[in-house]
Length: 536
Image 1 (cartoon, rainbow, N blue to C red):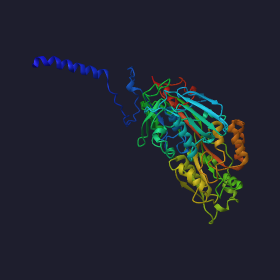
Image 2: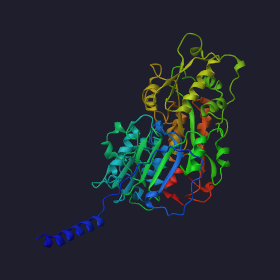
Image 3: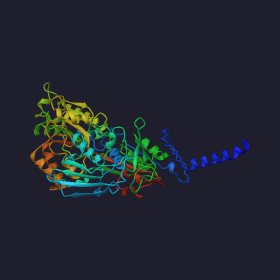
Image 4: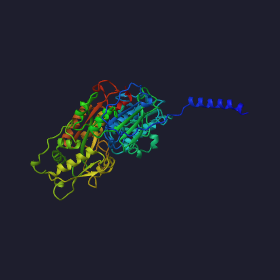
């Protein structure tokens, strides 16, 4: 009996093993191991072909930002914008329709009572990384978030939308605007996954603080390890579009100093570096063999914005005198912690310490009145340093000032509108100065009311001429160049925004990466193009 059963058992076992081999389960995913070595020893060269499991690119970056929401001023950073390009879907890229996301996008005959209607048709293949289709609900959610959340960047185009209508299958999205928007192609960049946020607009400001929960791009955020300063991206295998990511994993790792950067480039622990330079960064990286070094200025500035709804700063002569006390080159050096490769914005010559106390700031000198309150986000080291410098600088003119630390969400929602009732009179924050016509218009459009939460226009400044120019930029009746010249003249007269520091970045390409071009000087963008890079 046993002799007859043995062949049958062996046959059954062979069939089972064959079935397992034909239908393997998903391969295990390994999290990156902590880097503990900073050895300067050159890595051993090998000609072994790179397997799929070895396709990892590691990029050195600045310390991680407060969050990863590309539409929030509080999360504004180079890394946040780069991640958004890699992970979140956009209707247009550089003025060209994103054919991966959309089948068509065009202006159509507007419905009665509106100025403009734009119709988008979403590709039926477009989906989030959890398999949920990208639909008109994601367009609607972004619109509602941008118009109901304080502290958002570039809200002007979304404020012109009156309604969004979606077809039954969610694929056709008709956007009605009560004001004609010339640059409508810049709308609906970096959609966020509304289905994971339960379409709750109150979560718009907090949902992406610790990562991006789903992807509609070539990569997805696998993990954020703030303790180790690491963001890990995995290739989004559900990405449906052309040109999927070349590399399986990308690791962004904090580099906190030039010594660490040099050691990790030399040892092969990082392949590329994109950071703010230190005093000796450029010389140190250029001295290394087999590296290319490039400096790039970004459209981003650390600014002091004076609130024109503050009782202390409501009058133009007071703002002008306060501005005259600010030594911008000194503030820039101390905020950046360096003097090399320091982009100092155009500025007024500051009043000398021997020129006497100001005459128009009686409420800020002596024992009466209250101090000038400057709001700053405590997670932003550069802004903190700038605020401390300004407080100390003003003290030499007998002007009393103090810092108020709060996150930018609270500053824009509560402290700036509050004025004398426990609010702040000014705020220091990084602002993206790009965004073309809509970005420029949004920084000067009048807020709905003086005590409204601030978005775009942090100062609350409102005048008939600036409102007219902002509206002309939105409709296309004025060019960006005309708008920039006009608002520069207004700011020179009204002293509303004081640029303190520009952003200059150092890019370092190590050996072994094949990127957009063999010459780093010819790269049109930095780490936002990492999906096209590959290991040599």
